[in-house]
Length: 175
Image 1 (cartoon, rainbow, N blue to C red):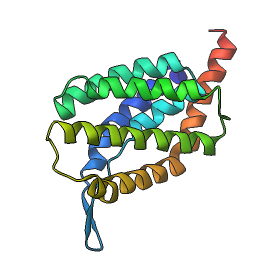
Image 2 (cartoon, rainbow, N blue to C red; image 1 turned 120 degrees about the vertical axis):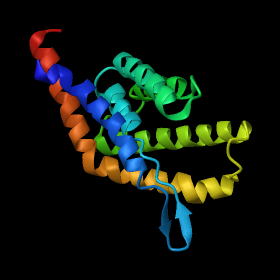
Image 3 (cartoon, one colour; image 1 turned 135 degrees about the vertical axis):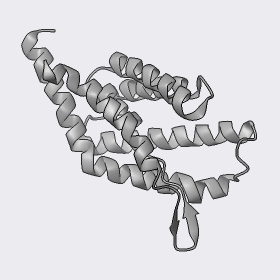
Image 4 (tube, one colour; image 1 turned 90 degrees about the horizontal axis):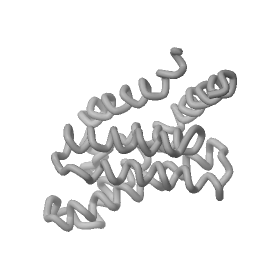
C-alpha cells in the first residue's frame, strides 16, 4: 500500500519544494545576475512517463499544471498545457530511445529547456518580460539547465528506483 502512494507523494513533495528552492534565485555569479528555476516536478513526471506509464504521467502533469497555474502565475492554461505535453512527448519518445538513465536524463533536460524557451517566448509575446533572448539564454536558460541537470545527477537514480518499485508491485499484484 505504501509503494502505491509513493509516486504521488514524491510528486507533491517536489511541487512544494520548488518554491523553497526558488527563494535562492537570483544569485550573483561574478558580475552577472543569474536565475536558477527549479523544475523538479516536471523532471520527475518525465521519468514517470518514460519508466512507468505515459497516461498516468499526463494526468499528473495536467493536475499539477493546473495547480502551478493557480498558485504561481495566475495565467490558467500555460502550465496545464505544457506539463501534460512534455509528459506525452517523453512517453512517446521511449519508442525511439533507449531507457538508460543517462539518455533519460538528457531527454528530460532537453524537454525542460524547450519548455523554458516556450515560456520565455510566451511572456515576451505578451510583454510580460522585456528581456532579450540573448539575456534570457545567459542569465536564465543555461543556469536553469545546469542546476536541473545537477539535480537529476543527484536524484535521477532515486526517481528511477521509486518508479521501478511501483512497477514491480504492480507486476506482483497483477494490476
